[in-house]
Image 1: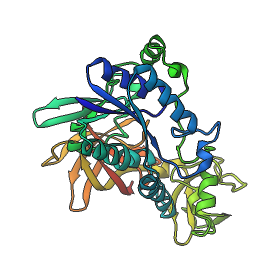
Image 2 (image 1 turned 180 degrees about the vertical axis):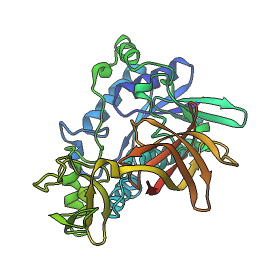
Image 3 (image 1 turned 90 degrees about the vertical axis):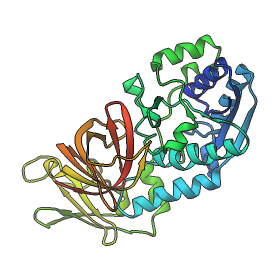
Image 4 (image 1 turned 60 degrees about the vertical axis):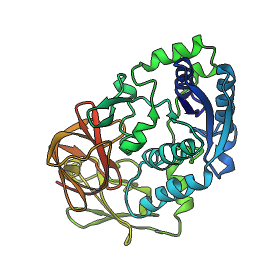
Length: 360
């Protein structure tokens, strides 16, 4: 097959491309230029789209002996990922930009372009597996559970899965690093990127403060039970449901226990706080469901994951007119609208939905 290898400049994408070459595929490496912000290209910038990352990807392609190109998708990335991130925070929700990037950029724009150019699919260094099921390709968890990235891939459709290749799904991360060193890849010991790539210094609050300063200039921090005003803040987008640190109230709760953000009202700027037990959620509503295969036809007894590195919760998922309804058998804490609920049947990813509402 003719495959595009999306090469971020890290060890995982480099080894994934190498394995695709070893498998006999005709591989072309590409690096995505995603940022309009020159700061993200400076030395020491964190994320996955600095100039150093582009150079690392090019050197890896040279070692593998494959063609290499840089694709500029910065305009689409800005419109589909960065603007969405700002809009979600401005609306009092908590987005995951990595899911949106996978949905709109890596497995939409890149795959679309690859297919239009006559390629058969895209290879990435994600830790997940694609298996052939009775009704088409299925997305499953990776063998290395600590590195499993099936949660952020839960936004892929069956059509996108058909063109996606994840050569690392059956490997441990430690083995991938050893393999990279044996192949002579300079990125073998390169640290993983953890930050939001378009926020070059890792200061999400500071970045939002600059971008959303005119959206919400401040409001009250209120005790959810008594209605007492405990303090003020300079913008509701500085907070997310479940947050404990950075409230700057200056005095403890009467019982001496920490307070947590329970609710955010972006129009008035009101931020409600209270005890941890008030964060307990047993029901969720989800919108914009995406099914990684055939959609379920009836209620599904399954598990759901509500954070990128969170635990699985036993649940029953029902289809609704607007999306899905999720009944958790065990309470989850600190779940915010805007996050993704990814639905699993064993190791298989059934689909995902964006959380729109939570209830105790």
